[in-house]
Length: 387
Ligand SMILES: NC(=O)c1ccc[n+]([C@@H]2O[C@H](COP(=O)([O-])OP(=O)(O)OC[C@H]3O[C@@H](n4cnc5c(N)ncnc54)[C@H](O)[C@@H]3O)[C@@H](O)[C@H]2O)c1
Image (tube, rainbow, N blue to C red; front, side, top):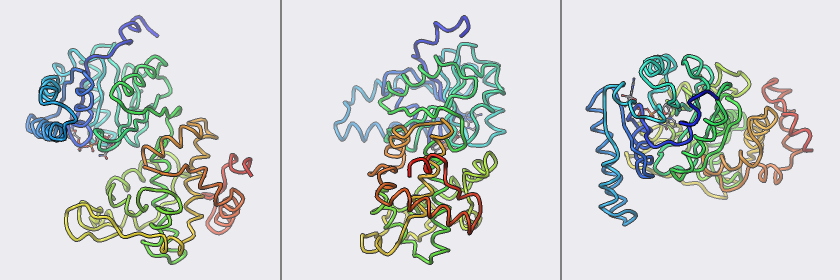
């Protein structure tokens, strides 16, 4: 660590770049924990909208008596909005970037930021799928660059994945973990900058695998979703969760993950088709399911339907990806289970479901799928060792 290391030990001032879905939420949770926050966007009108959302959210907390009016006022007083980049990062200790998930845009933003931000400032990217090391290497401070993956909505979701790049200094990792804890979130460190980190590596491939299961076994959406909910302990079905997340997010994540590693996903064409047809899920009224109006609607799933579907290939898929993370030293079983519980809402640990289904049955299924559909399905060595 260089001469600036002492100054790394405390974070008081946070600048958030991008005031959209994620940025305004990150600004709010930071201010609620006492940080001085600057929220920066390219136009004042975006910042005004973001402040409206923060005000609305705080008013809700006041009306539910979770915080007092006085607390709400002081939280708001800790958030400043600034368009000028240099001015916005003048007092920052850490910059959290939440601009759109476009690699060229991120690189452009970091190149501008790097020129105006003091050398001691830590850069933390909220990217869901882009490689941390690659972005870090475009700056003059890859040792002070880290991934900080909040989930949507940041105000409610407890999990934050922390992803060091290849050159990230351990003190920056510690500092980021401390910050995450200080905003009352649960950090899970993804020890290697692998495609999808932990949660998206489990979730995105499973959406595709569910499409294959539907096609190969002729199950209905509801049968598969019921099995996912009642047999695998998901809070909702996988198609339901995909519709809730949005096909735009899933399709773009699929592309990013595929670019970096062909073995993460066996892409099913339905995802791209839904995206191209603008059937993005809940937000457009149709995705895998149709929704009658704009308000949030749950699909009727039940245990009888669950019994009609054997989800072994889905259990095998999520387990094989979890095992891959362990084998490749990106995580361990306890951390993966924590990430799956907090990031995907799983009520039952993945490895418990695997034991119920039987590791041998899962390996047999993966071998069967490998013979039929190719090496994508080969069981991870960790699973073989668990037999
Ligand atoms: N939306 C999610 O569910 C979600 C979840 C986790 C992580 N993420 C990640 O968070 C990041 C932001 O996603 P989002 O959904 O909040 O996007 P968004 O489109 O809602 O917001 C992005 C904001 O960044 C602003 N912006 C564009 N260029 C900028 C610049 N140069 N400087 C400052 N602001 C700029 C835009 O005007 C916009 O307000 C992405 O990397 C995304 O992958 C999103």
